[in-house]
Length: 92
Image 1 (tube, rainbow, N blue to C red):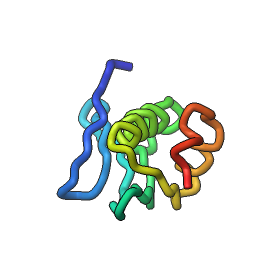
Image 2 (image 1 turned 90 degrees about the horizontal axis):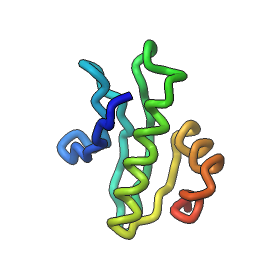
Image 3 (image 1 turned 120 degrees about the horizontal axis):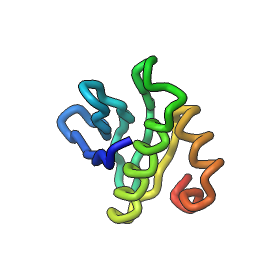
Image 4 (image 1 turned 30 degrees about the horizontal axis):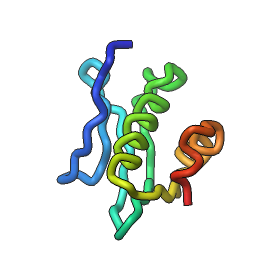
């Protein structure tokens, strides 16, 4: 996969990762000192190809840079963070 950039679409309150003409995204709510992840979605034909994980890494790297903690309400986001030790310290 190309080195796509994860960007924060604050207007839609979601992080986005463009893949071709499709978008993988994580919807969120911002609260003081925290980012609440409510839903992660990848188009059906992109599932199982690692794009949602790439989105998670980019989003969590940005959260770390901002100094915020992450509350993953989405089951996928919670499971991903639990599986990836490098990001567990961000989880609340």
